[in-house]
Length: 454
Image 1 (spheres, rainbow, N blue to C red):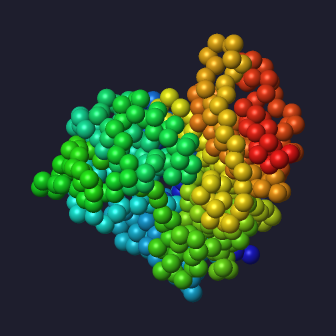
Image 2: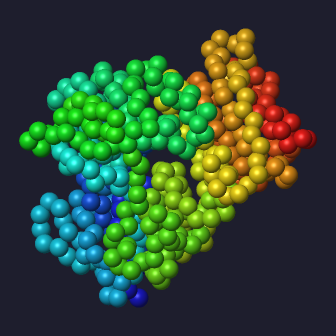
Protein backbone atom coordinates (compact mmCIF):
# COMPACT_ATOMS: atom_id res chain seq x y z
CA UNK A 1 0.00 0.00 0.00
CA UNK A 2 1.41 3.41 -1.01
CA UNK A 3 2.15 5.75 1.83
CA UNK A 4 -0.02 8.83 2.30
CA UNK A 5 1.20 12.42 2.03
CA UNK A 6 0.59 15.17 4.57
CA UNK A 7 1.36 18.69 3.37
CA UNK A 8 1.57 21.45 6.00
CA UNK A 9 1.39 25.10 4.94
CA UNK A 10 3.10 27.14 7.64
CA UNK A 11 6.08 26.12 9.74
CA UNK A 12 5.65 27.86 13.07
CA UNK A 13 3.81 26.90 16.27
CA UNK A 14 0.72 25.13 14.94
CA UNK A 15 2.27 23.65 11.82
CA UNK A 16 5.33 22.13 13.44
CA UNK A 17 3.41 20.94 16.51
CA UNK A 18 1.03 19.11 14.21
CA UNK A 19 3.81 17.64 12.09
CA UNK A 20 5.66 16.36 15.16
CA UNK A 21 2.54 14.80 16.70
CA UNK A 22 1.57 13.11 13.43
CA UNK A 23 5.07 11.68 13.03
CA UNK A 24 5.03 10.20 16.54
CA UNK A 25 2.01 8.14 15.55
CA UNK A 26 2.78 7.29 11.93
CA UNK A 27 6.24 6.25 10.69
CA UNK A 28 7.80 7.63 7.47
CA UNK A 29 6.92 4.56 5.44
CA UNK A 30 3.24 5.13 6.29
CA UNK A 31 3.01 8.94 6.14
CA UNK A 32 5.27 11.38 4.32
CA UNK A 33 5.23 14.84 5.97
CA UNK A 34 6.29 17.95 4.07
CA UNK A 35 6.12 21.47 5.52
CA UNK A 36 6.36 24.71 3.53
CA UNK A 37 7.19 27.98 5.29
CA UNK A 38 7.56 31.25 3.37
CA UNK A 39 9.85 32.96 5.89
CA UNK A 40 13.49 31.97 6.54
CA UNK A 41 12.64 30.65 10.00
CA UNK A 42 10.40 27.94 11.42
CA UNK A 43 9.44 26.79 14.91
CA UNK A 44 10.40 29.98 16.73
CA UNK A 45 9.12 31.93 19.73
CA UNK A 46 7.34 34.92 18.16
CA UNK A 47 6.40 36.21 21.62
CA UNK A 48 10.11 36.77 22.28
CA UNK A 49 10.59 39.23 19.41
CA UNK A 50 10.13 42.45 21.47
CA UNK A 51 12.73 41.20 23.94
CA UNK A 52 15.14 40.52 21.10
CA UNK A 53 14.59 44.02 19.72
CA UNK A 54 15.15 45.47 23.21
CA UNK A 55 18.37 43.43 23.63
CA UNK A 56 16.99 41.56 26.63
CA UNK A 57 17.58 38.52 24.40
CA UNK A 58 20.84 38.98 22.50
CA UNK A 59 20.64 36.43 19.66
CA UNK A 60 17.79 35.75 17.27
CA UNK A 61 18.91 32.12 17.25
CA UNK A 62 17.87 31.87 20.91
CA UNK A 63 14.23 32.22 19.83
CA UNK A 64 14.36 29.22 17.48
CA UNK A 65 13.02 26.14 19.20
CA UNK A 66 14.05 23.56 16.62
CA UNK A 67 16.06 23.71 13.41
CA UNK A 68 15.22 22.12 10.03
CA UNK A 69 17.98 19.58 10.75
CA UNK A 70 16.23 18.54 13.96
CA UNK A 71 12.99 17.98 12.08
CA UNK A 72 14.84 16.07 9.38
CA UNK A 73 15.88 13.54 12.02
CA UNK A 74 12.14 12.91 12.50
CA UNK A 75 11.74 12.47 8.75
CA UNK A 76 9.79 15.72 8.53
CA UNK A 77 10.77 17.53 5.34
CA UNK A 78 10.79 21.27 6.08
CA UNK A 79 11.24 23.82 3.30
CA UNK A 80 11.72 27.45 4.39
CA UNK A 81 11.46 30.30 1.88
CA UNK A 82 8.77 28.36 0.00
CA UNK A 83 5.37 29.98 -0.42
CA UNK A 84 2.09 28.20 -1.08
CA UNK A 85 0.28 30.17 -3.78
CA UNK A 86 -2.76 28.08 -4.58
CA UNK A 87 -4.71 25.14 -3.19
CA UNK A 88 -6.38 22.90 -5.78
CA UNK A 89 -8.93 20.92 -3.79
CA UNK A 90 -10.26 19.02 -6.77
CA UNK A 91 -6.86 17.57 -7.72
CA UNK A 92 -5.61 17.51 -4.11
CA UNK A 93 -2.47 19.55 -4.67
CA UNK A 94 -0.78 22.81 -3.61
CA UNK A 95 1.16 25.17 -5.87
CA UNK A 96 4.53 25.96 -4.24
CA UNK A 97 6.80 28.82 -5.26
CA UNK A 98 10.45 28.71 -4.10
CA UNK A 99 11.23 32.29 -3.08
CA UNK A 100 14.98 32.04 -3.66
CA UNK A 101 14.63 31.05 -7.29
CA UNK A 102 13.24 28.17 -9.25
CA UNK A 103 10.03 27.30 -11.02
CA UNK A 104 6.75 26.79 -9.16
CA UNK A 105 5.65 23.19 -8.69
CA UNK A 106 2.55 21.30 -7.64
CA UNK A 107 2.77 19.24 -4.48
CA UNK A 108 0.14 16.48 -4.13
CA UNK A 109 -1.46 15.70 -0.78
CA UNK A 110 -3.77 13.20 0.84
CA UNK A 111 -4.10 15.37 3.94
CA UNK A 112 -3.58 19.13 4.12
CA UNK A 113 -3.01 21.24 7.23
CA UNK A 114 -3.34 25.00 6.83
CA UNK A 115 -1.30 26.79 9.50
CA UNK A 116 -0.70 30.10 7.76
CA UNK A 117 -0.95 32.19 10.93
CA UNK A 118 -1.90 35.84 11.00
CA UNK A 119 -0.59 39.01 9.39
CA UNK A 120 -0.26 42.52 10.88
CA UNK A 121 -3.01 44.97 10.05
CA UNK A 122 -1.69 47.72 7.76
CA UNK A 123 -4.24 50.51 7.34
CA UNK A 124 -4.66 51.97 3.81
CA UNK A 125 -3.42 55.46 4.68
CA UNK A 126 -1.07 57.74 2.72
CA UNK A 127 2.60 56.84 3.09
CA UNK A 128 2.04 53.39 4.59
CA UNK A 129 4.57 51.80 2.21
CA UNK A 130 7.42 54.15 3.17
CA UNK A 131 10.69 52.71 4.42
CA UNK A 132 11.06 52.95 8.17
CA UNK A 133 7.56 51.55 8.91
CA UNK A 134 7.52 48.04 10.33
CA UNK A 135 4.95 45.44 11.28
CA UNK A 136 6.19 42.87 13.76
CA UNK A 137 4.75 39.38 13.47
CA UNK A 138 7.58 37.11 12.31
CA UNK A 139 11.15 36.58 13.45
CA UNK A 140 12.26 37.97 10.09
CA UNK A 141 10.38 41.22 10.75
CA UNK A 142 11.79 41.42 14.29
CA UNK A 143 15.32 41.03 12.95
CA UNK A 144 14.60 43.83 10.47
CA UNK A 145 13.56 46.20 13.29
CA UNK A 146 16.57 45.36 15.42
CA UNK A 147 18.96 45.77 12.49
CA UNK A 148 17.39 49.14 11.62
CA UNK A 149 17.90 50.37 15.19
CA UNK A 150 21.46 49.03 15.26
CA UNK A 151 22.38 50.38 11.83
CA UNK A 152 20.59 53.70 11.63
CA UNK A 153 20.55 54.81 15.25
CA UNK A 154 17.05 56.36 15.14
CA UNK A 155 16.24 58.89 17.85
CA UNK A 156 12.44 59.14 17.69
CA UNK A 157 10.06 56.18 17.50
CA UNK A 158 6.29 56.15 17.18
CA UNK A 159 4.21 53.10 17.99
CA UNK A 160 0.82 53.02 16.27
CA UNK A 161 -1.59 50.92 18.33
CA UNK A 162 -1.89 50.26 22.04
CA UNK A 163 -2.35 46.49 22.18
CA UNK A 164 0.08 43.90 23.52
CA UNK A 165 2.62 44.05 20.70
CA UNK A 166 2.51 47.85 20.56
CA UNK A 167 3.17 48.23 24.28
CA UNK A 168 5.88 45.56 24.35
CA UNK A 169 7.62 47.21 21.42
CA UNK A 170 7.32 50.60 23.12
CA UNK A 171 9.18 49.18 26.10
CA UNK A 172 11.77 47.55 23.83
CA UNK A 173 12.57 50.83 22.09
CA UNK A 174 12.72 52.70 25.42
CA UNK A 175 15.33 50.14 26.48
CA UNK A 176 17.26 50.99 23.30
CA UNK A 177 17.34 54.65 24.32
CA UNK A 178 14.80 56.05 21.84
CA UNK A 179 12.25 58.75 22.50
CA UNK A 180 9.00 56.80 22.19
CA UNK A 181 5.50 58.08 21.46
CA UNK A 182 2.41 55.89 21.20
CA UNK A 183 -0.71 56.71 19.19
CA UNK A 184 -3.99 54.89 19.89
CA UNK A 185 -7.39 55.74 18.41
CA UNK A 186 -9.25 54.44 21.47
CA UNK A 187 -9.32 56.51 24.68
CA UNK A 188 -7.26 53.84 26.49
CA UNK A 189 -4.39 51.46 25.90
CA UNK A 190 -5.06 47.71 25.94
CA UNK A 191 -8.67 47.62 24.83
CA UNK A 192 -8.98 44.08 26.19
CA UNK A 193 -8.87 45.57 29.71
CA UNK A 194 -11.54 47.61 31.44
CA UNK A 195 -10.85 51.34 31.45
CA UNK A 196 -9.93 51.51 35.14
CA UNK A 197 -7.37 48.71 34.80
CA UNK A 198 -5.96 50.09 31.54
CA UNK A 199 -5.33 53.40 33.31
CA UNK A 200 -2.80 51.62 35.55
CA UNK A 201 -0.92 50.41 32.48
CA UNK A 202 -0.96 53.89 30.96
CA UNK A 203 0.51 55.28 34.17
CA UNK A 204 3.37 52.76 34.02
CA UNK A 205 4.09 53.70 30.41
CA UNK A 206 4.21 57.40 31.21
CA UNK A 207 6.49 56.76 34.17
CA UNK A 208 8.84 54.91 31.79
CA UNK A 209 8.94 57.96 29.52
CA UNK A 210 6.49 56.93 26.78
CA UNK A 211 4.37 59.80 25.49
CA UNK A 212 0.77 58.66 25.02
CA UNK A 213 -1.61 60.18 22.48
CA UNK A 214 -4.91 58.47 23.18
CA UNK A 215 -8.16 58.99 21.30
CA UNK A 216 -6.25 59.99 18.17
CA UNK A 217 -6.69 57.99 14.97
CA UNK A 218 -3.86 57.61 12.49
CA UNK A 219 -4.49 59.48 9.22
CA UNK A 220 -1.19 58.94 7.39
CA UNK A 221 2.56 59.38 7.21
CA UNK A 222 4.69 62.21 5.90
CA UNK A 223 7.47 60.95 3.66
CA UNK A 224 10.38 62.28 1.61
CA UNK A 225 11.63 60.23 -1.35
CA UNK A 226 9.85 57.18 0.04
CA UNK A 227 11.37 57.57 3.50
CA UNK A 228 9.35 58.09 6.68
CA UNK A 229 9.47 61.57 8.18
CA UNK A 230 6.47 61.85 10.50
CA UNK A 231 3.26 60.24 11.75
CA UNK A 232 0.06 62.21 11.17
CA UNK A 233 -2.96 61.79 13.46
CA UNK A 234 -6.30 63.58 13.65
CA UNK A 235 -4.76 66.04 16.11
CA UNK A 236 -1.03 66.40 15.41
CA UNK A 237 2.08 65.53 13.44
CA UNK A 238 4.77 63.56 15.27
CA UNK A 239 8.28 63.52 13.76
CA UNK A 240 9.54 59.93 13.55
CA UNK A 241 12.65 58.07 12.47
CA UNK A 242 11.04 54.65 12.88
CA UNK A 243 7.44 53.43 13.24
CA UNK A 244 6.16 50.12 14.55
CA UNK A 245 2.59 49.15 13.71
CA UNK A 246 0.82 47.52 16.64
CA UNK A 247 -2.72 47.60 15.28
CA UNK A 248 -3.36 43.93 15.80
CA UNK A 249 -3.46 41.07 13.33
CA UNK A 250 -5.94 39.39 11.04
CA UNK A 251 -6.08 35.71 10.04
CA UNK A 252 -3.92 34.95 7.01
CA UNK A 253 -6.64 33.11 5.11
CA UNK A 254 -6.62 34.47 1.55
CA UNK A 255 -5.25 31.14 0.31
CA UNK A 256 -8.08 29.25 2.02
CA UNK A 257 -10.69 31.73 0.80
CA UNK A 258 -9.54 31.41 -2.81
CA UNK A 259 -9.80 27.62 -2.53
CA UNK A 260 -13.38 27.85 -1.27
CA UNK A 261 -12.68 26.70 2.28
CA UNK A 262 -15.37 28.21 4.57
CA UNK A 263 -14.37 31.12 6.80
CA UNK A 264 -16.03 32.37 9.96
CA UNK A 265 -15.32 34.94 12.69
CA UNK A 266 -13.06 37.71 11.37
CA UNK A 267 -12.43 35.51 8.32
CA UNK A 268 -10.72 32.79 10.35
CA UNK A 269 -11.09 29.26 9.01
CA UNK A 270 -14.07 27.36 10.41
CA UNK A 271 -12.97 24.18 12.19
CA UNK A 272 -14.59 21.63 14.45
CA UNK A 273 -13.17 20.50 17.79
CA UNK A 274 -10.79 18.10 16.04
CA UNK A 275 -9.46 20.99 13.89
CA UNK A 276 -11.09 19.69 10.70
CA UNK A 277 -12.39 22.22 8.19
CA UNK A 278 -15.62 21.66 6.31
CA UNK A 279 -13.57 20.17 3.44
CA UNK A 280 -12.73 16.46 3.90
CA UNK A 281 -9.02 15.87 4.41
CA UNK A 282 -8.27 19.55 5.05
CA UNK A 283 -7.39 20.74 8.55
CA UNK A 284 -6.48 24.13 10.03
CA UNK A 285 -4.81 25.25 13.25
CA UNK A 286 -3.22 28.31 14.82
CA UNK A 287 -3.77 32.00 14.17
CA UNK A 288 -5.59 31.33 10.90
CA UNK A 289 -8.29 29.19 12.57
CA UNK A 290 -11.28 29.87 14.77
CA UNK A 291 -11.52 28.90 18.42
CA UNK A 292 -14.53 28.47 20.68
CA UNK A 293 -14.89 30.82 23.64
CA UNK A 294 -15.93 28.82 26.67
CA UNK A 295 -17.39 31.78 28.56
CA UNK A 296 -19.08 33.52 25.64
CA UNK A 297 -20.18 30.14 24.25
CA UNK A 298 -19.57 31.16 20.66
CA UNK A 299 -16.81 31.03 18.02
CA UNK A 300 -13.99 33.52 18.43
CA UNK A 301 -10.62 34.48 16.98
CA UNK A 302 -7.64 34.66 19.35
CA UNK A 303 -4.11 34.87 17.96
CA UNK A 304 -1.80 33.53 20.67
CA UNK A 305 1.10 31.10 20.60
CA UNK A 306 -0.40 29.07 23.43
CA UNK A 307 -3.58 28.47 21.46
CA UNK A 308 -1.68 27.73 18.25
CA UNK A 309 0.48 25.08 19.89
CA UNK A 310 -2.52 23.36 21.46
CA UNK A 311 -4.53 23.41 18.25
CA UNK A 312 -1.54 22.08 16.32
CA UNK A 313 -1.09 19.28 18.82
CA UNK A 314 -4.75 18.26 18.48
CA UNK A 315 -4.62 18.36 14.68
CA UNK A 316 -1.44 16.30 14.64
CA UNK A 317 -2.81 13.62 16.95
CA UNK A 318 -5.84 13.23 14.70
CA UNK A 319 -3.75 13.25 11.52
CA UNK A 320 -1.62 10.53 13.09
CA UNK A 321 -4.62 8.28 13.60
CA UNK A 322 -5.35 9.17 17.22
CA UNK A 323 -8.29 11.05 18.65
CA UNK A 324 -8.13 14.46 20.32
CA UNK A 325 -10.31 17.54 20.63
CA UNK A 326 -9.66 21.19 21.42
CA UNK A 327 -12.53 22.36 23.64
CA UNK A 328 -11.83 26.08 23.43
CA UNK A 329 -10.33 29.11 25.13
CA UNK A 330 -11.18 31.66 27.79
CA UNK A 331 -9.05 34.48 26.38
CA UNK A 332 -6.15 34.36 28.82
CA UNK A 333 -3.20 36.65 28.10
CA UNK A 334 -0.31 38.12 30.06
CA UNK A 335 2.42 40.66 29.40
CA UNK A 336 5.04 42.73 31.16
CA UNK A 337 4.79 46.42 30.33
CA UNK A 338 7.69 48.37 31.78
CA UNK A 339 7.51 47.84 35.54
CA UNK A 340 4.09 46.19 35.71
CA UNK A 341 2.69 42.79 34.86
CA UNK A 342 -0.66 42.81 33.09
CA UNK A 343 -2.99 39.83 32.69
CA UNK A 344 -6.58 39.15 31.75
CA UNK A 345 -8.94 36.25 31.13
CA UNK A 346 -12.60 35.67 30.38
CA UNK A 347 -14.92 38.63 29.82
CA UNK A 348 -14.35 42.31 30.46
CA UNK A 349 -17.30 44.57 31.34
CA UNK A 350 -17.93 45.65 27.75
CA UNK A 351 -18.20 42.03 26.59
CA UNK A 352 -20.53 41.12 29.44
CA UNK A 353 -22.83 44.01 28.48
CA UNK A 354 -22.74 43.00 24.80
CA UNK A 355 -23.90 39.52 25.81
CA UNK A 356 -26.76 40.98 27.84
CA UNK A 357 -25.44 39.56 31.09
CA UNK A 358 -26.20 41.11 34.45
CA UNK A 359 -23.01 41.12 36.45
CA UNK A 360 -21.24 42.47 39.51
CA UNK A 361 -17.61 43.50 39.86
CA UNK A 362 -15.05 43.60 42.62
CA UNK A 363 -11.74 45.42 42.51
CA UNK A 364 -9.19 45.25 45.28
CA UNK A 365 -5.69 46.56 45.82
CA UNK A 366 -3.40 44.33 47.81
CA UNK A 367 0.15 43.13 48.28
CA UNK A 368 1.93 40.61 46.10
CA UNK A 369 3.64 39.15 49.19
CA UNK A 370 3.10 39.42 52.90
CA UNK A 371 3.29 43.16 53.53
CA UNK A 372 6.17 42.76 55.99
CA UNK A 373 8.27 40.64 53.62
CA UNK A 374 10.99 42.44 51.61
CA UNK A 375 10.07 43.10 47.99
CA UNK A 376 6.32 43.17 48.53
CA UNK A 377 4.62 45.21 45.81
CA UNK A 378 1.18 46.41 44.86
CA UNK A 379 -1.32 44.29 42.97
CA UNK A 380 -4.76 45.26 41.67
CA UNK A 381 -7.25 42.47 40.98
CA UNK A 382 -10.62 42.94 39.29
CA UNK A 383 -13.20 40.16 38.94
CA UNK A 384 -16.60 39.86 37.25
CA UNK A 385 -19.37 37.44 38.21
CA UNK A 386 -22.87 36.85 36.88
CA UNK A 387 -25.60 38.22 39.08
CA UNK A 388 -27.90 35.48 40.33
CA UNK A 389 -25.81 32.43 39.49
CA UNK A 390 -22.56 33.81 40.92
CA UNK A 391 -20.68 32.24 37.98
CA UNK A 392 -17.25 33.76 37.48
CA UNK A 393 -17.08 35.64 34.17
CA UNK A 394 -13.58 37.07 34.03
CA UNK A 395 -10.69 38.76 35.73
CA UNK A 396 -7.88 41.24 35.23
CA UNK A 397 -4.65 41.79 37.17
CA UNK A 398 -2.12 44.62 37.11
CA UNK A 399 0.80 44.64 39.53
CA UNK A 400 4.46 44.25 40.28
CA UNK A 401 6.62 41.16 39.79
CA UNK A 402 4.78 38.00 40.78
CA UNK A 403 1.32 39.47 40.21
CA UNK A 404 0.50 38.46 36.65
CA UNK A 405 0.65 34.67 36.81
CA UNK A 406 -2.13 34.70 39.38
CA UNK A 407 -4.38 35.03 36.33
CA UNK A 408 -3.99 31.26 35.94
CA UNK A 409 -6.08 30.75 39.07
CA UNK A 410 -8.90 32.72 37.46
CA UNK A 411 -8.48 30.99 34.08
CA UNK A 412 -8.68 27.58 35.75
CA UNK A 413 -11.85 28.63 37.55
CA UNK A 414 -13.36 29.72 34.23
CA UNK A 415 -12.53 26.39 32.61
CA UNK A 416 -14.16 24.61 35.54
CA UNK A 417 -17.21 26.90 35.52
CA UNK A 418 -16.75 27.77 39.20
CA UNK A 419 -18.92 30.23 41.07
CA UNK A 420 -17.55 32.82 43.46
CA UNK A 421 -18.83 30.71 46.35
CA UNK A 422 -16.93 27.68 45.06
CA UNK A 423 -13.76 29.73 44.59
CA UNK A 424 -13.54 31.39 47.97
CA UNK A 425 -12.24 28.29 49.75
CA UNK A 426 -9.70 27.24 47.11
CA UNK A 427 -6.68 25.76 48.86
CA UNK A 428 -4.04 28.08 47.39
CA UNK A 429 -0.41 27.91 48.48
CA UNK A 430 0.76 30.41 51.07
CA UNK A 431 4.12 31.54 52.40
CA UNK A 432 5.19 35.15 53.08
CA UNK A 433 7.62 35.37 50.10
CA UNK A 434 4.76 34.54 47.72
CA UNK A 435 1.49 35.87 49.10
CA UNK A 436 -0.38 37.28 52.07
CA UNK A 437 -2.29 34.67 54.04
CA UNK A 438 -5.36 35.64 51.98
CA UNK A 439 -4.20 35.74 48.38
CA UNK A 440 -5.32 38.91 46.54
CA UNK A 441 -7.39 36.79 44.14
CA UNK A 442 -9.34 35.31 47.04
CA UNK A 443 -9.76 38.74 48.64
CA UNK A 444 -11.35 39.86 45.37
CA UNK A 445 -13.58 36.76 45.42
CA UNK A 446 -14.75 37.70 48.91
CA UNK A 447 -15.65 41.15 47.61
CA UNK A 448 -17.57 39.51 44.77
CA UNK A 449 -19.58 37.51 47.28
CA UNK A 450 -20.48 40.72 49.10
CA UNK A 451 -21.58 42.30 45.81
CA UNK A 452 -23.63 39.19 45.05
CA UNK A 453 -25.30 39.41 48.45
CA UNK A 454 -23.85 36.10 49.64
